[in-house]
Length: 433
Figure 1 (cartoon, one colour):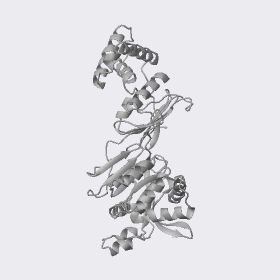
Figure 2 (cartoon, rainbow, N blue to C red):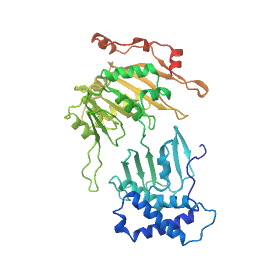
Figure 3 (cartoon, rainbow, N blue to C red):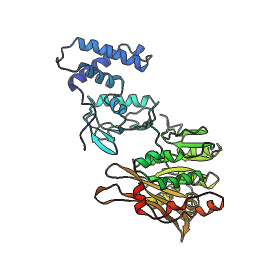
């Protein structure tokens, strides 16, 4: 772990805990007024009340009183020590393992921080405020919550006794800046020939699945590819928690909904995929396929919705195909494995696999074409791959020397295509990576 670069722990923890309790008691006496206040008004009132409380106390002369006030007010009515982490653009993910341990991800690497909550009760209060803002509730009867903050950040909560270290809170921050293909090239995540090829595939309506592990950058790449869809087309996006940032004019973003406290009202990804087919979409973009919705997505790809995109968890392109088979079988539809494989082979044109490296870098490691069925097995051919360098170097991207099978049909239809990008030339690829 690298050295912490976040805010320090609570100034004088015992004092902070005392002030926290007294401030909440003071605000409680005015609860009727408090519930009507805006965040700014409530913060101003809390700061005023806390100033009065501190004025009655004898504090060390060298104490940073403004920092103490800011910390206690944040913890009492805001998100506590997480406020500064959420405001830090270098932090991409926040992981709270109980009140006493907070980690962040910066540049793909995890860092321990000095950030602390004054108590487990204070952490639970912050969690309650976070989930209540999005109309959710979390308690012992419902100790697991997935939700989205107003700024698009995704949160996950696990309470004790499921979490043995106390309440666990994970926040995947929503990027304020929309990345482009140029950004990915500059970051070394992909080469220019690969970008050129994927842009042609999106423009010519190839069905693409982005695969990879957790935190590998699947959604980021899906977002970048979706932005290449022509402006004139109608797009329906479907997600568990909305993360895609598309600027298209004819865009309908749909978000799944969990059941209410009575166990009713759940709208699943699968429900939304089925409904999307009735919305006259040119393209359907599903944030992630995890289960039976994979069958509906494949059927959509096979019934006139070419150029659709989605992501799925997998360790590699071949593993993705196996996982797709399992997901289709999870749909409850009784299909023989041969029929499932035919559906996949007919629907999926490309698999783009991304991976996160030990140094935190995220790169496209494989672009693979699905070519059909061969002896009952889904056949593929590699088009591009990343060659890892020895001794921790950056490596380079290389074409496999194969031209996609569908390029011939595109050429015959009049498309002007650049075949030189498929020439196997490691040195040239290295210069462009």
